Length: 464
Image 1 (tube, rainbow, N blue to C red):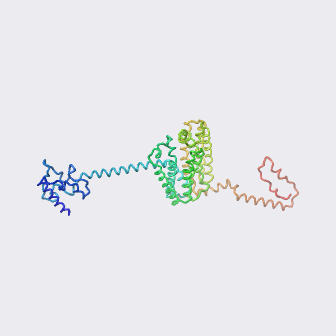
Image 2: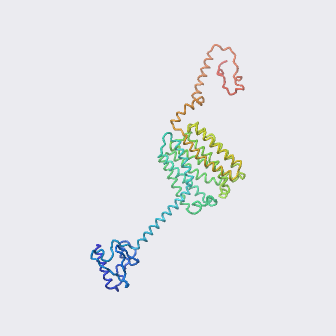
Image 3: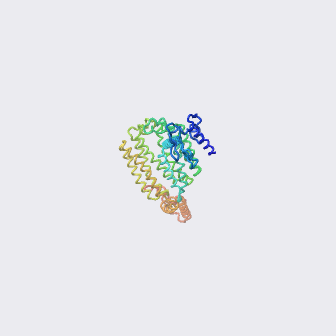
């Protein structure tokens, strides 16, 4: 078939050479449709050059083609090979493809940046870190790293959804604040429906992932925390300063989420890290609220610092909650979560936090608030690292129990029951004793100062 095409083409070329006045529309090389079979947009003569393995075709001054017939082969009969023709229309296709790839790349970069900012990715990573720490603390001797990865992934998705919904609801407020006016929604880089679809999608996907890969308790905690943040804390920011305390509850739930994913339950030991996060957030955000109080006022947010011109109440809240962090190290040791070293390290770390809060209370300026803010940023990772480094496994907790029983065993219900049985035996023996004529002081006399806290004598129930 291709040879027949070449034969017809050669006859047309010879006719053009013999009769230059031939109608140009009949010239197959002049026709724009000659190469349409092969997907070429325009004819050969619309381009300035025609390349072949033997070089370009020379043109005569008269405009006719000078063809040299090569007897060595039919493919070279016309001065070019049909298999090596390069048409200038091809670069247009390449440029178009490159342009499309560039547009796709720019779209991916644009939406990726918008989703990153909507999700408050750095804040979400902190939430993931606390959730992962809770998972490790609740894992016991063996850590399920696959489960840890699934839990962190689901937590990241739920946190991204909550932060995105927060920005959807606060678009107009963010537009009034210097700190937030360049976010995707106030700046117009993304529409509200687009952001709402993104937030809903990742929230549902993250909750489903936690339910499937962890358990229903973990998924329920994640969904509850998302709802508390997006639908309670977010609108409350424009109503009452108590929003800061509600937000602190939201920040304390992720470690419980991780613990539940690892152990399937929430025990008393699981509350150490959530309590630390709750009390830590208040000094942290009080310092931030003091630094950005004018910006919060412009955005319409009701913070404690907005009505506290002197900053005294704001600094006092920071100091009080810093003090609440002090006993957590001892409780972590006493409840068998960590070794005694963490008790010492946590105490020293918290004292430094208290010192910064006290400094902020005495020097209620932007400098003091900034020092408090940066100090709180350092406190949390060090506290979490100490928990993970000094954590006790189940075997180590069993070895610790005998020592604890020596110290606190006298308070156990079993020992109290045995003591009561011994007292009953003594009372019974004395009732049966024939010696009943000696005088005994009354009960009230035995209970007077300086020992009012002593128990009543064992013969108090005797029939005197």
